[in-house]
Length: 51
Image 1 (tube, rainbow, N blue to C red):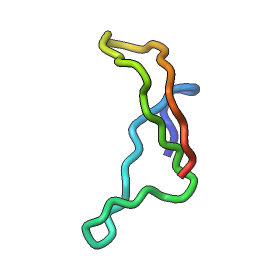
Image 2 (cartoon, rainbow, N blue to C red):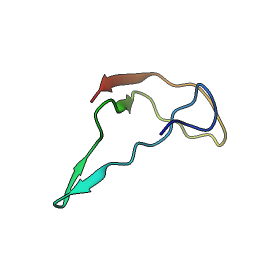
Image 3 (cartoon, rainbow, N blue to C red):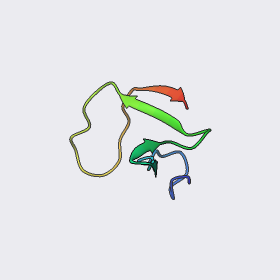
């Protein structure tokens, strides 16, 4: 599933298999490298991995 707003990220939801969370193949996981505390939209650096 992709974000409703082009160019924006959204939270990935894993599928539970025997109680273990599994992310579908091709899911892109990102780790925020800075806090994002203001409401609305903005830009932060993210470390990206393809799962």
